[in-house]
Amino acid sequence: MTITVWLENAVQDAERRGLSALRPLLETLARSTSALRTGDWNFDASGELDELKGPDAR
Amino acid sequence: MPAEPRTITELARALQARELTAQAVTERCLTAIAEGNPSLNAFIRVLAGAAREQARRADAEMVAGRFRGPLHGVPVSLKDLIDLSGTTTTAASRVRQGHLATRDATVVTRLREAGAVLIGKTNLHEFALGTTNEDSAFGPARHPLDRSRSPGGSSGGSAVSVLADMAYASIGTDTGGSIRIPAAACGLVGLKPTIGEIPTDGVVPLSGTLDHVGPLCRSVEDARILYDVLRGAPTAQGMRPRDARGLRLGVLRDYFLALLDPQVGTSFESACARLREAGIELHDVAIPHAEDVAPIYLHIVLSEAAAYHAKTLESRADDYTANVRLRLEMGRYILAEDYVRALRGREVLMHEVDAALTGSDALLLPSVPIPAHKIGVTTVRLGGSDESVRNVTLRLTQLFNLTGHPAITVPCGSTPEGLPIGAQIVGYRSRTDALLEVARAVEPCLDPGTSP
Image (cartoon, rainbow over all chains, first blue to last red; front, side):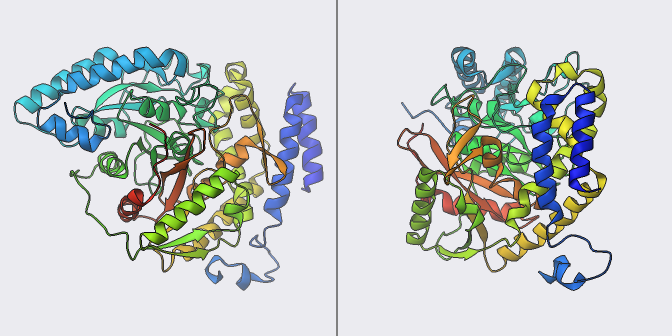
């Protein structure tokens, strides 16, 4: 799921639950998740750059 | 007349020599609580009757020649997240109304066996989910040096209890910095041991894989005594002296010094200069993925906290303070794949801290980027931008909860207004004892600040 789709769904769900105050926190979380997903240590099932990404290689 | 003992080490000597009684010391702490607690709000519950009885028993044992060790007869407070049989563990939340602990947490059992006088349960940020102590069902704890300021959190009441002479030490918890942040803000020593060394059973969890139990106190030597008791090891008075000269410390720069209040920056550089003068070798080290620390931390702590609170968020949502409820709800939206990504990132950071330590006795960095802030303030101006107080206060401590390395804060100066500033020293995993030896050698080289 992309972060854009995730955020749309999360905000909709929060509003349905009467938690509209959650919106700015979810936007913060979306930025944080974006940063998390761009870490160069993330998994890559294609196997590309596995050696570089392994913690022991650091 | 001899000076009043300020540390456990000094007090233990006076108690053992029968220059003081545990009952007299306990009464002095109870008086300090009676006078200070109405304005400082450090304690949620004072255990005056039980403390007097424990002190009486301690004196009787010492008169009979049984000295249990350096905590015998010493008043200690407990963060109200830790179970004490027969009392409510409130976690500073209305959600816990009606709870009654039916047994002691293991750390409490060990404190009792060591002869400590358990004087009361201290205030905290609700369920330890916050760094200011402002979101508490019992109202905010206040800084003894300036009541308009926060003592830091989440173990804020614990730090206040020690700084205001209501206890000689307090037992807190640290999931992202909750021992080290208030200890630094209050000019105390605060120790987060290696992950897993101190049992957390009977302690309300925030994040099962990040939670640590540890002490807040007035000296590294006191921290060593409490650490030994909490981990169930034999305690001895006096630490093995280690010469500061020849120690090698790796200074974390870049990310770790990039966003500091100018007074904290000045104090830290002055601390580095003092350490060099004392013959300590300082060299720069780096954590290549330091910028990833906050996202990794957030995804782990909020996922784990949300899992623990899911049931009561459905059934008793209004019993949480508004901010804590929203942060917990935020965690319920984190995807499993992102939690697993964060666990992967955590492993990378563990290796990077290990690598940074290689060739050094310990790492050195500031404890908290800002001094104690005003209650009610949610952002601070740092480096030309407005930063969230929460993010800033966690910035230098949360890494070591993720990696499990032991970390200790010691005072290293104060602002012109007298607000304390702390330096953080980080050791090798499972070598908390070695970290304490380094900290003991470093402590007298630093400026203790002007606070009491």
